[in-house]
Length: 196
Image 1: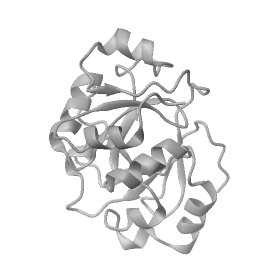
Image 2: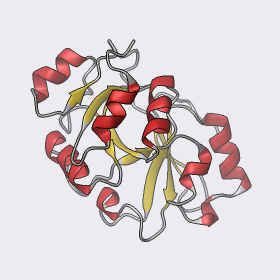
Image 3: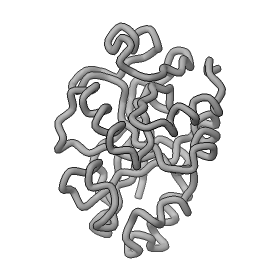
Image 4: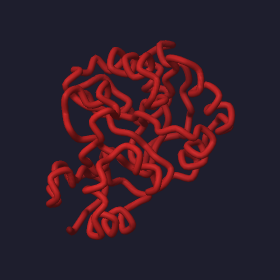
């Protein structure tokens, strides 16, 4: 059970430059408004993450991805994959539209997108009505933190809000599948075993 109402979390995320730590359906993550460059930069600073390592985004449903990716990625096979594994712990990398999220992808032509299998996060996405930039909650190179106490220990008060959802069940991040080139390529085996 999360300790803060989704409405209150959404209000924080709508403020410029705000970053929230939250339990996802895999590990704790750092999230922010994906359109807020200041907040995205803050995530990179907090994690001490190299700029060349892209961030992914959470969206609320399959229709939500259409403004961000090229139409060629919406083949029948790719839509079938999304419908089979979403919501769930599968991040799919699509070829993004040229003008979208360059500050999240640092020169990459792709963008990682996921619909989390978590009712709290889905409700939050509905309330925000914008995608959430997301990454695991940890200093780059370390294991993701498993609870709010570990997050406080490592980040102190530098995160604007920590939503305490208890201990994570999984230590595995999402599986990552690239559909950017047309053919499915498994880039990381994580919390979902995928067969495409």
